[in-house]
Length: 231
Image (cartoon, rainbow, N blue to C red; front, side, top):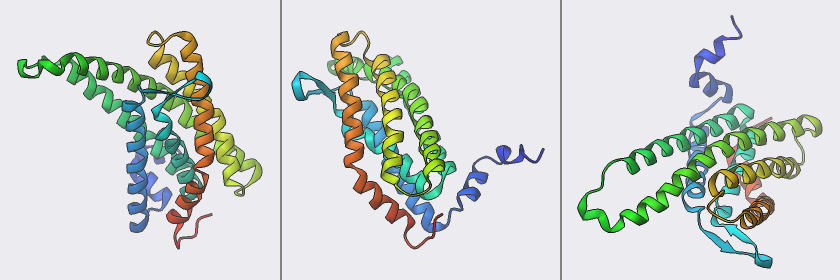
């Protein structure tokens, strides 16, 4: 019975486990804002493809989405697995809520005065709904896998080499995310050849961007820890 009690305590239990002080709450709120904004930007802007090396294609979501996974690793490194999972849950809820709002917005009738934007709106946000659904599925699988892999590697090599643990977890989780998201969001929209190009290029570029953002990750860890001692 005692083991079931923490589940029933809900968010309050998580807050006590993370030991949120007032400065920590402020920092975590900023992290949450960056995390959710980057996720929303990837879901809504990611439809656009830009030309890349050797005739390949790349979604503009590569600028914002690596930050999502890095934020999870940074929060997990400083506050632990519970805080990282709480961040992921917030992302799942926000994406699901965006889907609900999108379906509702597309379902209600149009006013005559807004008819000039109807076709473009329905086309863009109709695809955005599909992208949000794809993101939700890929996000749940890849982000929880990222947290699991990050802490699995940490248990094996200890708390050192954050950059290596983050890179290993991102390699696997970003592959899952790229495959699931691209198939659900773009299958039938782009040719299969273009789709394969997007998946491979997107995966490699997101991993490379994540590695390039490593100095920012260390900066984030330093700012979050501040004067607090974190194991």
